[in-house]
Structures are given as structure tokens and as C-alpha cells.
Picture 1: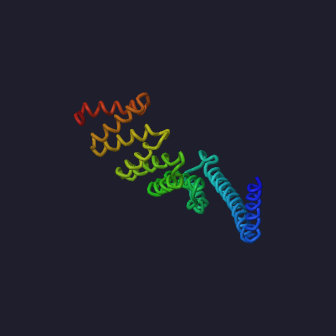
Picture 2: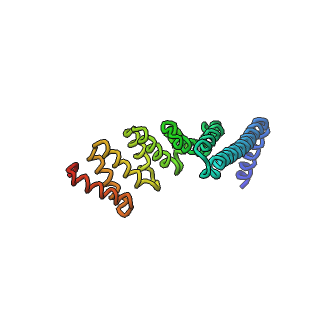
Picture 3: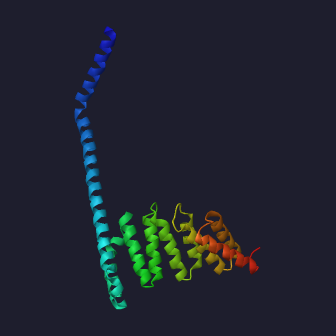
Length: 226
């Protein structure tokens, strides 16, 4: 028993000796940890405020752009679009949700202006900023729409496929039908039939699947597929 007490006492004395000898170093390490925690808290708070302000700015720009817009002439709408883009410019390079929202709005504005090249660029930036967000497949789908407007069928297929492959994308059926439609337009009837069949297999009861069935029948009747 005496040996155990001695051992405990020796261990305690050793620890006290270590803390005494290296007290300055221990205090420095603890201070660094505390400073890091404080810095992290401050940075997190600043970032949260920045995001909050960015989203608030985008909401304000959207409101000014769309408020009672149905009563406006095209020239007035164009003025609003121009003003909105000027205010959006500083937000377009932001990352995260602010960048996503800013680029989505810029894409909508550009599409309304029939500037499909810019609209596609903004949609792709929105997809990149929100890779893990539910908005990414929507952005890819709309990039596909812009690509069709630009007669760029190959890019349209790439973006529609990205949208169709995304888990739980609410327009996945539409994306699959678009793949079939674009491939049909490229005279790739085999590829079109595969897309239509996949749509029918996955979403048999959906309205887009019904259209896909009608296209499969039409392709067979025309002798384009077996």
C-alpha cells in the first residue's frame, strides 16, 4: 500500500514539476487555443452577417425589378434590368448561397434580354457555387435551355444529363424528355429512344413519360427504330 501511495505521490509531483518547469509554454498554448476559438467565432459571425446582407441586397434588387412590372412598357422594363444588373455585379463573384442567388437572378435577367450566352454563363456559375445545393440541377437544366437557344445541341445534352442524373431533381422527367427530344433532332434515333425508354421505365405514370411513349410509337411507325 505504501508503494502505491508513493507512486501516486511521485506521479503528482512529476506533473506539478512539469507544469512548473513549462508553465510559460503551457500558458502560451492555452492562450493560442483560446485566441483561435475567439477568432473562429468572430469570423463565423462576420461571415453570417455578410451572407445576411448579401441575401437582403438580392431581395431588394428583385423587388425593385419585379414590383408592378406587368404595368410597364418594354423600355421601362429594360431600364429596370440594366439597373438591377449594375447592383448585382458586386455580388456575382461571391461564393456560397449569395453567389448562387445573384447568378440565378442575373441569368433570369439575361434570358429576358435574349442574351442566352450570358444567361448560360450565369447558370453555370450558379451551379458551380451551389454544387451540393438543390439549385445545382435546376441551374444545369436552364443552362441546357440556353444552349438550345444558342443551337448548341451538344452542350444542351451535357447539361440536361447533369440535371437528369441529380438525385431527387423535381424536373428530372422533363430533363430526360429533353435529352430524347434533342437527340431526335440530331437524328440520333437510337439515343432518343433510349432516353424516352428510360423516362418511361423510371416515371411511367408521369405526363412526360406519356409524351415519351407517343414519341417511341412515332419513331417506330416512321421506321427510325425497331
